[in-house]
Length: 224
Image (cartoon, rainbow, N blue to C red):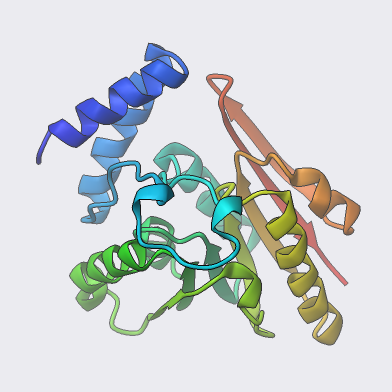
C-alpha cells in the first residue's frame, strides 16, 4: 500500500477543514480500500481531466465518498429491504459500485462524464468482477442529464456531484420514470447541499446522519 496518496489526502482535508476530520477520513480510506480491494484514491480536479460538454462547469471535484457514510447507507438499505437496480450519479472510480456489489445489488450502473474516471472505474470493477459473477456492472461515460432512468432503477446515489442546475434536471428525469412506473425509490445523498430539491419534489427524509460536523448523509424516499 502506497502511503503518499493518503498523506496528500490528509493534508488536503486538514487544509480545507481540520486535522481531526482528516485523521478519521484517512483511516477509513485505508481500511476501506483494503477491505474492498480497490484503488479509488486520490482527489482529482476535473479541470485537469479531459472532459467535454457544456455542463463541465457545473460539476464538482472527484472525491470518493467517505467509507463510514457509505457503509451506514448500505446498512440502512439492507435493513429497509431496498431492492432493484442501483444508479450512481458521478460514479468516478467505481467505489460505490463495488461496495454495492458487496451488499447484494445485482444490477449496478455508474454515470460519469470524465473518461479518465470511467476508465479507472472499469479497472477497479475488473479487479473484483470474478468475485461477483452474477452482478451486471455498467459504466456510462456521458452527462448525467442524458441518462434515461430505467423502470427498475430504484436506488440513486449522489455525493454532491454537480450543482443545483444539473440536479434539478436529474430529479426531473427520476420523477418522469416514477410517474411511468410508480415504485419505491431511495436516494442516498452525501453532502446533501441541494436536498431541498428532493423534498420539494415529494421525497421524504427517512434517515440523516452527521459526524464531525462536515460528514453528512441523507436518505430520502419516494413512494406511490
